[in-house]
Image (cartoon, rainbow, N blue to C red; front, side, top):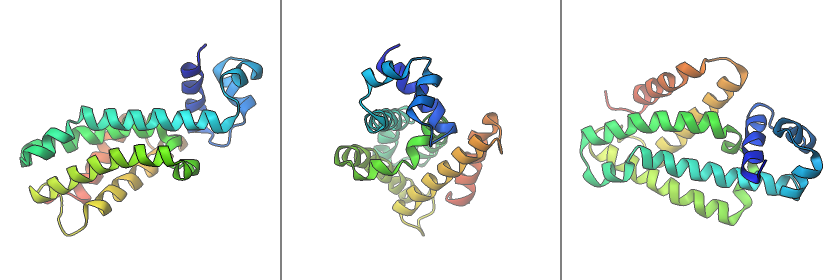
Length: 185
């Protein structure tokens, strides 16, 4: 089992049990603690890789929703369609990378912050374009909309982790909440 496979197994465990020990992570990955430590000097190194994978997944979510094209077009229908796709992509991220949504060490790592800001700026430009086109409300800032969506993702992650909602309902719930709360009616 390679470094990335171990990281994916660790992420699955940490999504369910954020305080899992390195011994727990080794067991979940099906490797010995010695093997885990050959790949990762410690938890900090492992968690950093999980952050990198999370940012990579966020970038892919924005790319899959084609938000840059929608933003550049300014077309309301294209922006709305991109927002619908983005909701589904973000649900996937919250489900697969939920641990990373609130991991405090990412806020103090300059490289992680810079990489996150690139994606955040793309998302902010998208929300601003959606506001200008009348797709989302313009009586709140694009920054607030981004924070609101982020907050919904944290709530979604917790609801999934605790079994309060079914995975199959997650995308619909996020989409209905986003469109019911920030969209123009």
